Image (cartoon, rainbow, N blue to C red; front, side, top):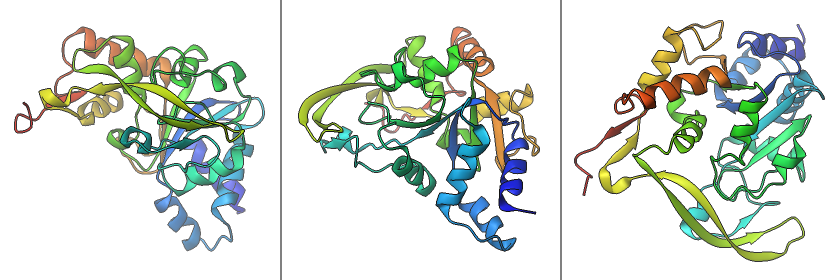
Length: 263
């Protein structure tokens, strides 16, 4: 078997198909070790190329390249600031060139059929209606996750929380120096719908993940498991998270309160 065939099968096991539109979260370490055990000769660049080729020019592959240093007062360069979302994410960032979205904290790189209007938007609110989360919902897309729990991957939950104006979060502006693709530096502000830390709010979505598995909304060869590849349709995900919020069941499912740090 060729490595391309192996990786195609890996993605198909997570119900990822050619021409899909999806956000792809991953921890590549387990897959990397499996490929070595099978004696494939490859690089991380090869893995990225195979994934891009598999989705194809008619599909849309969206890779998180988040970096949180802007929140701490550091400069953000859309051309040079590295992804903090793992080594494969950084490989994708380097391959994408100028196809990186604007936000200085929650940026993405995009391959395939690129929604240029959303790519070029200055989405000052990271999770709002100008974000790629919203575009993916309108496009009947998916979210794919490789070897990660929802707790370490499913940023889309915060998109729904922002749309619903969740009471345990609030809008916070971060300001700093932003360096564009022309190496021009300017002061800018970016908004994030953050947790109310003073209320002891802690993101905790383990039970939300269980609900999605129980309702068979996650699709994977490895049912009820974080191992391997799984995916979910964004519209199904939005419907379930919206229901939890509207039913006043979010505490214990989307967040918890740490009374030790509550002020």
